[in-house]
Amino acid sequence: MRGTHTFLLHEETVDFIIDAETYFNPPILNIQQGGESIQHHFSNEQLAELEYKIRTYLDGIRYPETPDQQMILHAECNEAIEEG
Image (tube, rainbow, N blue to C red; front, top):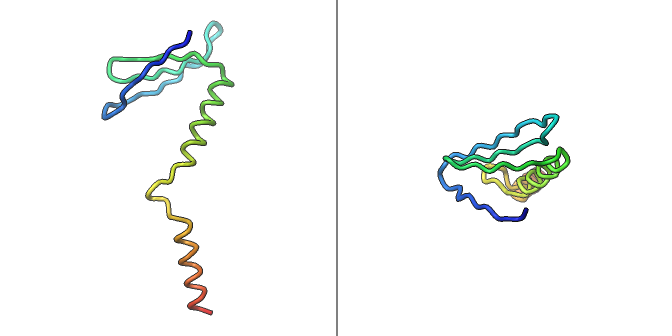
């Protein structure tokens, strides 16, 4: 079954719960917001792929509290020039 479901995730708390697989069911990813819930039935391999894609995306985000590597390099170069 194909379909698109949209949650508007503004200021409400979103809960993510994974129910472990059982003999009869694969793992279930529950996404809950307010009174609404979506359940996705995934295989372990699909969950691993989802985790990889989310981690890859998050690794690509530049967080403001992360030091800018270019600024660090310039500071080290300037310091080396002043010492030398």
